Length: 406
Image (cartoon, rainbow, N blue to C red; front, side):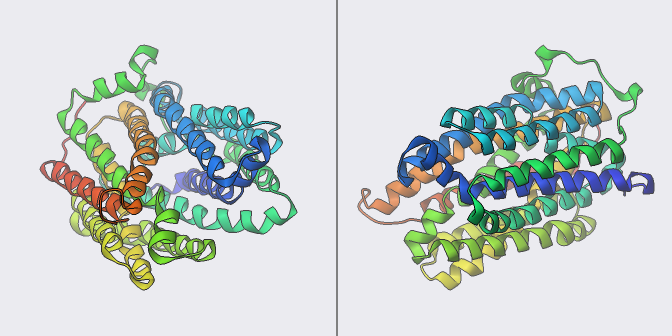
């Protein structure tokens, strides 16, 4: 439950996550054309550069998120969130002005370096909510992200008619305006007595994991988070290729399918997750989401009709509820001055998955769709993703309840 005095702060955090997602969505339709323009390459070669840019962002974020999370445990949440937002605004400006491909790489490295808005926002939520009532706000965070991801690509498609760089400046304007709003609306949530001294050597990704390794249940649940993310991302990194191959979809149809995906995600995260947690608790809600993920992934893998592809979007999109439920479950097991480190570790796990998935899943799709194995099975990445989801369920089940530690 969120106190009335924190309403403006929560609104700001949700707007921040929404705008972050809008910014990501804005990039998707225009970044291939910008890469082609800057590098003088065709679309196939542009995809390689685009993948490298994405991997660089995730790699830098993997190492920086725990540091920023620990800084927020020491300095407070407010300054870290505002500086991160400012960095994202500068990233979009640099991409819009980029005279060369190197600028795009540098801009995304900058965004990854300060990409802590989600982890520190999650830590902020833990500061101001009851431990047993966090799944609802975490679900609202997921809904805000899903809504932004619906709006971003549509907005980009509309304004890109006036130039492929214009969407970047719109994203920059939104981020920088949000900084000004945050200066007014975001109070500090972590009192000085709850803060802990920052030590850089204890704030690297590996040090944070070693710290959390003192709590075996956290190690298991972070690994469950990794497997869950690999299952979710098996779709996000292969969907355009799979649906073109399997269903013969055009970019227009792929775009509509992503719109449906976003709608289901928003409804699930914003409304359904809280009800499920109230009824069953965080762990069971997470496992319900993972079961839905398995249903969706196996449905994609085994269906060869477009209508079935659309049908199975629903359970897989609903599976995103497992993120908020699992994050809420883990937050109950640590003290207030360790929440930033935990949320930073979660973001690092997600970033690690975002490095692995673009390398593993498209390769698996390519191998099994080309027939080099002696048979064609384009859904192979989704079978692997379903296996990851099942293993995540097995890891979560023994930790259905957590006692506060640390």
